[in-house]
Length: 196
Length: 250
Image (tube, rainbow over all chains, first blue to last red; front, side):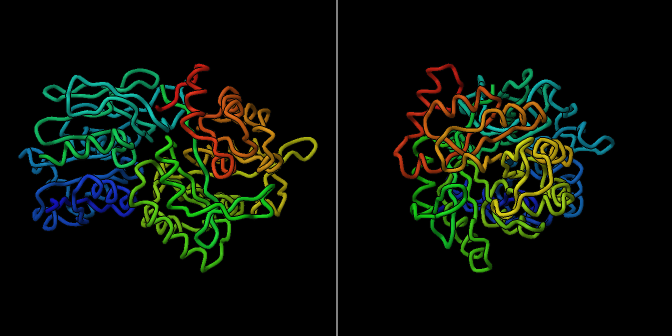
């Protein structure tokens, strides 16, 4: 029997693509649009949306900011993708003055000038952790975090300098790349996460 | 370092893949589901599906096609053709697209590009530009090459970047389907004009054509006929490119 996973339905992400990726990993995704729907889930995925401010606004509209903080603090199974990872930080240069979920200290910043922005395409990640796959995964981002948070396993990537491709602590994981469209490497990480 | 991408393009009409020369004389090339999965297995970095019919029935077919392709496609999927408003983008994302490409409607009303990037993000918004050399500059074409617009292609590239587009799919009408190689002058000029990624399109015949496009500044190379009809395998092209020092996803 496949395990059910709640996907926070921001309406503006590639949600159908994420659903397809989770199904290929043997999971049964269902949309989640409120705190009560979230509370009924065993595991939660927070997909990427457009801009940092829009992402936080969507979570506030669904009254999910505090429930998400509590969920992660309780080490319940959680995976956030792309902008979803950035929302875990305190703030972002993309949307000055907007407060993130603040689960991870630090700010998200823009890639430096001199490299192609957005950082679009397949790039190699590396990690000491077995949770993260090695090899090329698909990114689509103009902003990123760079400081490894204490107590987390991390994966890193390089685009005009090293940045965080993924972080994980306990059953909480976040990836800057898109595992749902990262071929075999992406499928591996989804399957590993699905063993929460 | 980001790899250079190889992107097979499936021009679709009434649920089938078709391909012509200079956007004309379309012939059948197979099923979009079978072809996209075959290209994924061969190492494609991304798939582009363009609806070249752009009729009302065609639109419904296209959504069905996207849903069917998405089930087993684990690489990025860009969809375009006839995208006119935000709800078209929403419908395509809802069917399983990761990115949506805007062409004629963006030329007619550039604000659509800004609205799309604000609603769905730059990572989702591709602007497709069809262009031909008109004697003293490259001019923008719309409606699948039927209209020559009084717009300089390089200036339009700068404008769409300013409006927030994530990348530009740049098709040379002069080279489309001709197998004379990509328009390298155009690629050099466009990649010099903007910081966002450029996808080269139109004219590929050999692996070296892709190599030349990357050397001219393209971040990705799109092709159709060489994959549909010529049995040129993406894995072989990648091996060739890697041998010449281009980093590709293996």
